[in-house]
Image (cartoon, rainbow over all chains, first blue to last red; front, side, top):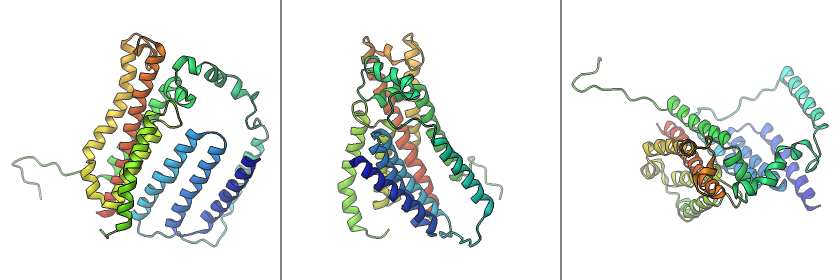
Amino acid sequence: MISLVIDIVLLLFLLIMAIFILRVHQLLAVAMLFGLYSLLVAGLFMVLDAPDVAFTEAAVGTGIATVLMLATIACTKVSQEKIQRKVAKTPLFICLVVGGLLMYGTHNIADLGDPEAPPHTQVAKRYIEDGQKDTGVPNLVTAVLASYRGFDTLGEVTVVFTAGIGVLLLLVRPQKIRIKGVKSAR
Amino acid sequence: MRDNLILRVTARILIPIIILFALYVQFHGDYSPGGGFQAGVIFSSAILLYALAFGLDTAAKVVPNQALIATASLGVLLYAGTGVVSLFFGGEFLNYSLLADEPTTGQHIGIIIIELGVGLTVAAIMLLIFFTFARRILN
């Protein structure tokens, strides 16, 4: 009952936040609102008993992403969105169709927390039953991430690493190479 | 830089707590929520707060760019290296069970090492991206 009330409050605020993000044209304010949005989503994950995901969402979505967004806005000259009065018809149509398809798709999703749902009876069952015995790690999320799916996580770390290299290559201006004794051509 | 007294005093109190929390999340990840990724992000946010409160140059003295690049590479190396070491022990790539006599002890050692690798890489890369962006603004 309490979780239902918390759910409704969080989702309501999420909706209000989304509408505000659409209405506000100051990009700085939008970045801050996105941070708040992430925090609310983290709260929702917490209600769903997924503290690991909530943790990541709160740290990355609210913290790092907001700061990076602010830094990016600070890089730009104009920090105000151009206001368009005209309603763009094609994007609106695509949004409505995709939204409708997503809503249609939710009808076939198994109920929340249903133990008989297919995802819970196959591989997850083995993790839950044998995870402790196989790895000796009480936190199953860590066991799955680091041990069962260790190769995936290696890929993720490599992706983060590659992102860093990409930013360095794109944004750091290379220093001119100087050879001793040779004056530059100019 | 403007004199943000309140920000500086608050940052000075908060930063050690954030770093301590990051270390807790890092090394307690097998028992409680968290792990290398979260710990790395939390750790980088501590340095980020330092950079925001005390200026970019002061922060760059604490964590120079070269050190960040080296740390990021070290993290990936540590992770992949653990996989290669388990190959040498006669198992599959990233099969930690063979790292010690007892399979669960081996799993424990492997998980702690690779989480450390994840944490190092994530923390270093987040800071690197932030510093690179911030330098671009200031120049």
